[in-house]
Length: 430
Image (cartoon, rainbow, N blue to C red; front, side, top):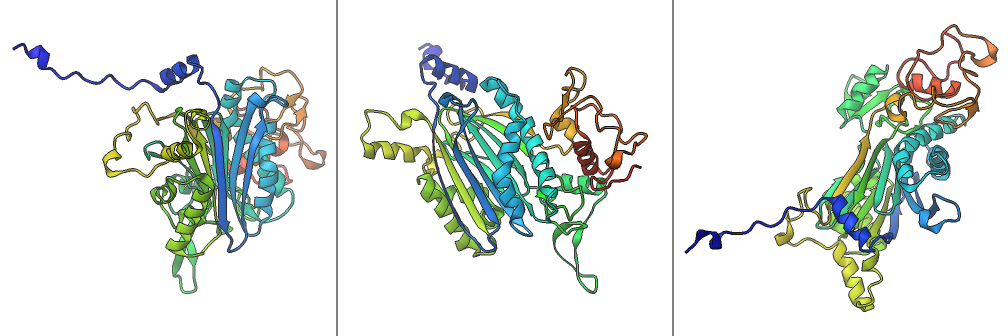
């Protein structure tokens, strides 16, 4: 008997995500996914806020350019910063995006615009003179592409087909983030615990002055400039299987792990899922903090409109997208090489250096006057305001040269202050 006849044929290797999407487009399956979402929460201090904007337009009047935005803001020392961010952060991000560009260019420019928008929101809010601060986790969904920007410790996780979890944010807690501790101390801040009478240290690590447990936030003008508003940004593309996003404040994540939060609501529609996550967090730890949860399901359109399915069967098919895993399914789709339910990472950056985040030499040499500030979007003639300080007094050399895009005087001050070079609140030349 020939041995060749007994050989076991190996299965074909999984196809790359781009190949699958290309086949889907050529087959006419390019319809945008549907979104289903829900939110829930319990208030202890009343400082949590959330944002739901499912019908934004990239091109005014063009429904095909629609995208959606969801966000969670966890305020501290009052609600002012959280309320301001809810009302204005998205506006600042959108103003930093170039007009009249296509979808792919828009998505590519979005991470930089998110950085500019967060810094702009921080500068504008601090002008109010209020000492409130807030975390911010902002999620932009355009088709199957998800972009998340975050400062603080409000978290966003992605639960894909088969139960594979991805964390799309980074916690900016000094207790858990060694890189942020090093950055804060290098910028002139101090990191330590609360010191009680007698020298006893208690509680989590904090920044001093101010005593904030976070290293990044919007607002907080009463603490050092080393508490920066520059967000961690991550952009991913889901496969045509879709996925579920869970966006929540630390009142949830202090009680539940990522896995526990996802498991608590698998198999449930988004609105009920958000309530179950909050309920599980309260059951685990009680109401120790504000708890806010937003759940967003990104659902392939063919799971919604298939004429062959009765309403009941269609509902069951939807539930199967986020089903509870049986023991036999564990690990089958765990590898990133799995073609169905996999996620392609497009972009990730968390540096607190504006030169790295806004790009080098983008406009200073190529653009014609007037120049536009890359953060506040104000037009200026070349070097207008860059050599003068308040009151019209001239400084001999207020700034060291840098290779980034044009920044106005106020935004240059903010940049240098965040890097520990000077205080943006100082009015004296030095």
